[in-house]
Length: 450
View 1 (tube, rainbow, N blue to C red):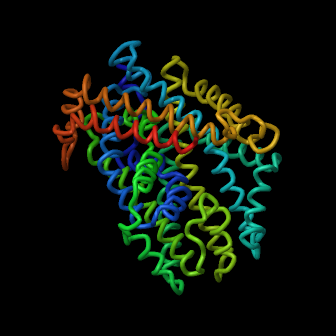
View 2: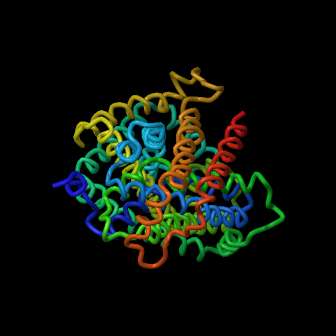
View 3: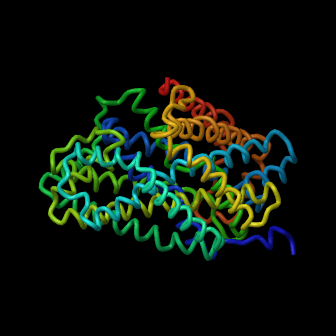
């Protein structure tokens, strides 16, 4: 029996799609998207995100998943199969670097969310002012005992799931997490719209104010599109490698994955901004929107303890499902690259990621004086992952798909496609358009740091 035949596969098409949605829909859809929308004009920012999702995220998603399904391997091993130990393996190495670095700081955000669930259940956040909530959140970042306990609990839960494999671990977990996320989010959105003045927030979300359109708003939408889509991180390559070549539809599945992410972000926007408008709160309060401003809204709301608990439960479901997807990608890529079995790969990458997490956890305390390029270590990790390793991998993956892999891409992506195929006229877009736009995101993003 060949290696491709022996490779574990998804239990069903639904399991693949729901797990891929879980990977793509992270705290970025419910934490970062709303505060970026609040700071960038509301509806016009949403319009930019939708446009960029269609013309950028979906084509990149198609390409990455097709490479995985074609090779039946993860990113590094797959590129070696296609091109040997050549320059093109950079696609896999950059993806692996991105997921390992990203998990190391992303998991600290998700662990904060987990801690907030218990604080709401205990009533510990009731009757705090916005300033007090801000002080509380700031205090949590320097309380190393609580910080490490929550981080290590989350690592342990993640490793237990990932050790279960694709079907019994990742797929099974996401079949619970993602439907639960959608249900909680819809309930919160309906609750927000029922508040006096809540519909004004809904109108604000869906009404593009073209007078607020600017280059910075467009670039913010483009950057958010990359953050939301999860492309260029090697995980979608791995997810594609678990697909049955004869019974999977890449063009349709890839489109559903990316657009579902946008739908989740929109519903989150409705839930959050309807509540903010109802209580006349500042929609442009930045990254503290979810951990500072919104909890205050819940304290003012009838049944706020329940609604706050539900909100952070769904935020945790989104964040943890994304961690699981990233972890699966890292374990698959690193394990196959070095010939390790799954258990060994998971143990080794977990040790590496905990070591990197130590840098981010202590970036506000004992390592506060360590500031590479003038950034604290948490910000530096995000800078390296989102503006160095991820875009490099995405750029070269796009160029490879549009050049050396193009004919095979056209043939293989069409195999199993029931509704539509990848358009052949997109070849110049893969070779020039996507790389140039990605490079532009990098240049503008780096300029923003300095």
